[in-house]
Every structure is written in structure tokens, then in C-alpha cells.
Image (cartoon, rainbow, N blue to C red):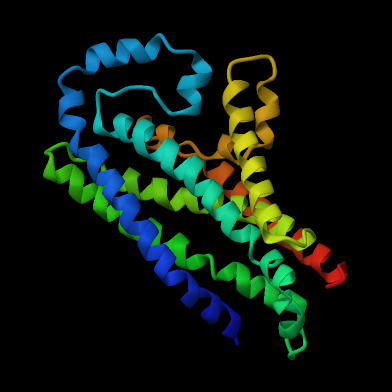
Length: 262
């Protein structure tokens, strides 16, 4: 059991470690410059208040007066919501389509393994980067905040990472659906990136307008690191909703893959 998951997971170890190191280095750099921001937070917050609401909402720029507000804008809204959302969509987009394009999938399905099991086990391999990033980074962020004497609240930092998991799974679900219907991996991956980015922008630009309801189709509407870190507000209903959406997307991908000719 789970031979495919183990094989695919091993293939992701090096990439996951490299990504973890790069993100840790970037986060460390960002945190190291916060003390200089803290000396002029009044001016920075005044500048932030002058920005359009859509910009402030989209990039989590609410206040730089605390380390929580600073990290929300400079790290989590950009790295976790946008870049990691795109990363997991891209990774899932190649799960099936890459093997179809290379012809490897035909050989795999010639073995005694069902299509459902194959897809589920491939999707489970994304647990490697999902768990690694959400385990290592919060520890690193907390340690770095202690090093500069601006200690972030560890409880809400942990909650940001826990509640990011449903969001990232929903993004991965989008990529999986595309991977199940497209024959070329690059097409599925690039299409997934485009869709998630457009959903992010849709949610951002419609905030505070008469068309704000349009943003409800975007996964970003239901995961807001700024609300968690700065306002200490949890959207548990949104998290459950994202888990449900991710499950539905996996089921849809399975149904589509069962019907396609490879």
C-alpha cells in the first residue's frame, strides 16, 4: 500500500528542502530589517492608510506598528497566500499530465493499480512540502522574532500555518483537476497558475465595491493571515469550507480521469 506515495514523496524531498531553505532565508532577511521599520511606524502606517482599500486588503498591509502586522504584509500575504498557493497549484498540475505526456502513465496503469488509487496516492505526496513548510517555517519565524526582541505571538503564528493547510490543499485541488483533463504537464501547470492568480486578483480588486461578492469564488477570501495575526480573528468556517472544496476538487479530478483515454 502507498508505494506510489512513497515513491513520489522521495522525489519531492530535495525540492522541498531547497524551497524551505530559500523561504527561511527570505523570511530571516525580512525579519532582520523590522527594527528599522519599528522606529518609524507612525509614518509608514499613515502611508498605508492613504493606499486604496483593495491594495491594503490584497496585500495585507494594515499596520506596521507590530511584528504581527509587518509579517502579515511582508511575508504571509505574499509568500503563503500568493506564492505558495501558486506553487501547490503548479505541483499538482503535473501529477497526472506529466506522466500522460511522457507515456509513463500507460506503463503504470498496466500494473495492478486502479486509477483512483494512483491519483489519490500522487496527491498525497504533496503532504511532504505541505507538512515540512508548515512545521519548519513557524519555528524559524518565532526564533527570528526572538532574536530581534520583537517576539511574535506563537499561538496565532501556529494557527496561521494550520489554517493555511486547507487553503493550499484547495489550490492543489485546482491543479489536480487540470492535470486530469490536460495531456501536457506545462499546460496544466501554467493554466493552474493563471487561474489561482486571477482568483487572487479578483478577490483583491472587488473588496469594498458593489462586486465584492464575486471574490467569494476565490480561495483567498477564506484565508487571511492578517486577520489571524493582527486581529486575532479565526475563520474556522472558511477553513472547513476550503477543506470541503479541496475534497470536491479531488473527487472531480478522479471522475474526469476515470473517463479519459490515456
